[in-house]
Image (tube, rainbow, N blue to C red; front, side):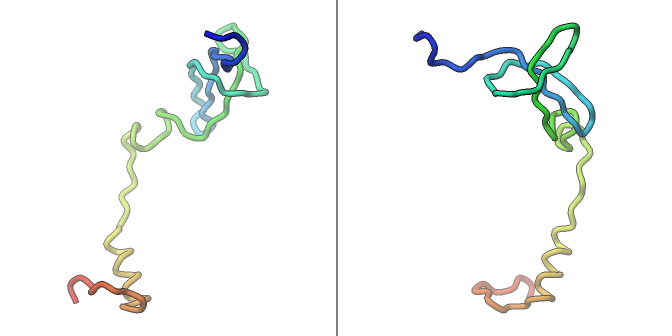
Amino acid sequence: MKESIHPNYREVVFHDLSCDFKFITRSTIATRDTIDFNGKQYPLVKIEVSSESHPFFTGQHKIVDTAGRVEKFRQKFGKVGSRTAVAGA
C-alpha cells in the first residue's frame, strides 16, 4: 500500500444519544470529540439511531393507518389532477 494516501482506520466509540448506548467499532470517520471508554481514550461519534433504538431491531413497530390516510386524501382532493380511476369508485 502507498503511504499517506489512506485515511486513518481506527477504533471509534459510537454513542446513541436516544438511549445512551455506546459501542466500539472501527472507522475512518473524522471527529473532534473523544471519550474515556473501558479505561481507554477513543474518538467519539454521536448518532441518533442505532440497533438499540431503531424500531426494526427493538420490535416496537408503530402501526400506520395507511388506508385511513388514503381515504382522507381522496375526500379532500377527490379526482382533481388524477389520471387514474379511484379504486372502488
